[in-house]
Image (tube, rainbow over all chains, first blue to last red; front, top):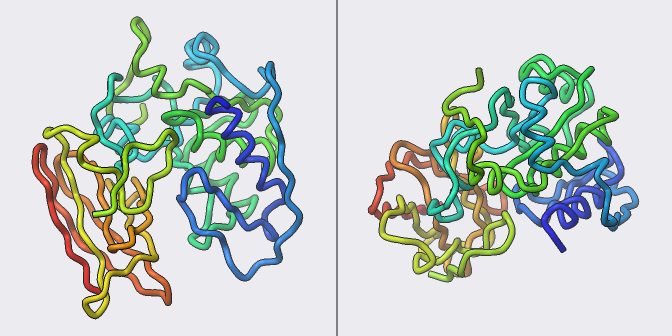
Length: 190
Length: 105
């Protein structure tokens, strides 16, 4: 199972929404399971080969620079190039630091409350549109280091907020930061 | 310390990744969480970076241990344990150094 299929399965396990949703995101251990909310039914989605409506590959990502929303959901320290990986992992990596030009940095964890539940629709729209400056009229590609954290953001944008064309960049920074001949930005978003 | 090798995915193993998986150039932040002298083996250690933003989280090991691989500079360590126990410590990390933080809740 590659990282995208794994990640999309994780995302779809949270397929009931907002008020009732307790997010169990075992792949990241980022948030504990929420408490005190009604727990609704869960389902598991097994991604099939060829689901390219959901998965972006590198050529599509390079072509999207300056044209589509690119959402980098890593921590600000990974986005700016201070870290190459989440800090629970060794920082010895092959790739260069930084982010894809024109990407906005919205850490995946900002979509959730402290108790692990998703934030409200209004809060999520404000987060992505007003704070980060995403144009909801454009198509969107989310990425992180290997596509797990960005599967969470894909779920938020596509399933919770209903944006029609959202893809997860499967190779994410592990691939992009290792490519020769592609542009990379360091520092804050421009 | 009950750390384990580098996992395949993005998540952290309990106690953190073993130092043998890294090199001597890492800026390691590690330590143990105790309460009244007893290791706290249930809970999480978080590292917060620029703007107190979430950077990484490690489930505590059986011995209360955690380990991060940071970059040189200032960080904040936050510990979350059952019954609402929390602690925060400022941490300074540097390349080739192991910064040890003992947290007594």
